[in-house]
Length: 325
Figure 1 (cartoon, rainbow, N blue to C red):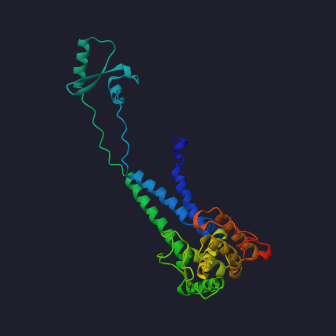
Figure 2: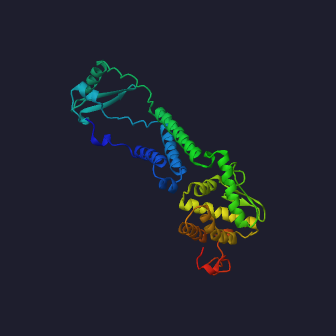
Figure 3: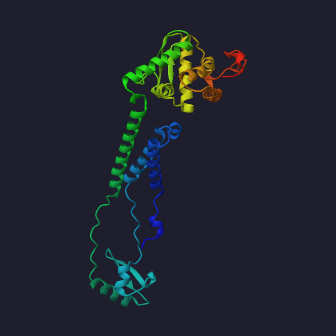
């Protein structure tokens, strides 16, 4: 009977099972989970785990160190128990013989050696077949990584910006352009950069616009967040707030404001009304922009919020309303 501990799953197996359950919960579970955790996070964790399994599967198995003591077959052959001191190891002419010893003389030991040579050797056990477990682990790892990539592609294709049909994307861009034009004070155009050539992870930017120009680009991730708010009434607090801030930020650049800190300050204030026009409540709009303001206050460099960006400060767009942003 196996010991109870042998039936317990390994820690990494539990992690794999937990990740699989989490992915299923993310797809079929509550909206709050999808809004709080981006799908790429569990995907990257799962890929890292499977890479660990692949590396472990390709490593050669450890070879146990040979036991130089008398083997069970030697003890059984000479009728001795488990005490290793009852047998004497004799090396002679490339041979290793275990001889029973209990104080015999040299001549008696020689006679025992000759007797041991006359005893036929035990048949060697059949050669063991190669251990195929590393190969199986390798193939299972490849299959799981492929399955995870397929799930990621399916989810992103059905829930992301690319999952919308062409007409819907065009309607959304027209709506974004209309809202940005109100902020810019002139007709401007907003494009969602599906190619990733203008904005995205490579460029380390969620949006881009030429100061005083008429065209701005947003990443598809920001576009889908704006679409969910304006067309489906969904508010993904941090993600929606960030998308609103980016759209308003680029609109202020198109209006002619070049300083990044000042543009950020104006964007958070305009973002409140922008969020309301797209469907958020007054309280939701202000909470989202306040969160964006607090997070941006800790930034450094060009995007640092100026000290004048405060209630009744020089950059307060509506000092009379007593609310900021």
